[in-house]
Image 1 (cartoon, one colour):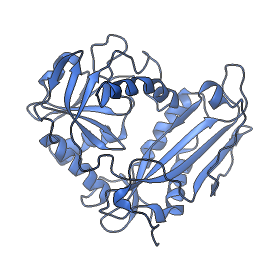
Image 2 (cartoon, one colour):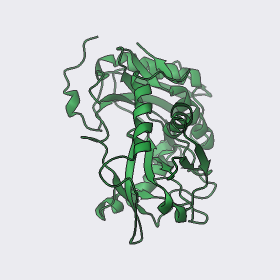
Image 3 (cartoon, one colour):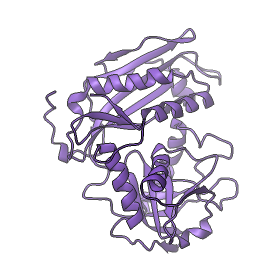
Image 4 (cartoon, helix red, strand yellow):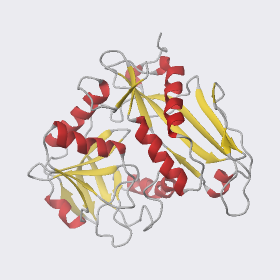
Length: 341
């Protein structure tokens, strides 16, 4: 497969239209067979459920070229399962998980020329999403839906390496108690836009959201889970019913325990104890781990011992091991890698 004439090293984390995408429609209580199409436009009613009441959800995952030249995806079955949970919470029809994974495979194959070569630092980002497409004027679920997957080549999230970032403790809640914080609903991200722009305007890279009930416990940022390392090398992640269950976080906890022999804990993390941690990072699909060097709590600075120049040593090992698994230089646990070509 001849690759597209793209300067892979110059890619940022943005949208570039590729040749093919997958589309399937839900009507009269059933999904159609779906199709791979070159039409990148979406045509829906002006009264579509997604436009009136934000009935939508999405996922994000990547395809890679491994060291031995294969094109693979990382744990797409977990993305399919998480989207199932999102659909059920939003009263949307579930796209069957086996068909979901197959649609990912089909989109990657159809856009194989856009999968960046091994060693370029770039990947093919995949965005599966679903929305209510039929007219809805009363407050109720739509009757018809569209499920789509598009692909776009992206560069590394951090150009020139992952420098530790500065975040602030937010006064705004990310999710309501017993709300939709645990699913990947588009409305959750719309709610966070004002706050992330405000953080950037005030010199911060991200927000640390606290639990909405007591505002004493660490939850997550607008788009990533937290990962902490204690001074004795234990990897700790916050546990809460309103945190999105990150596939990257779950994978990193497994890597920490099974590959690096570290102790791991998934538990409630109180804001008061953050100052006692040795390292902090944000984990998600886009960057894998974004190191945090400083947390500002209403003027009070919490400086992580790992500093503002590099990832902490444990965080670096976690990052190197997981990306090594994804890229094929380290043997993966069974079922983690979906070989496409």
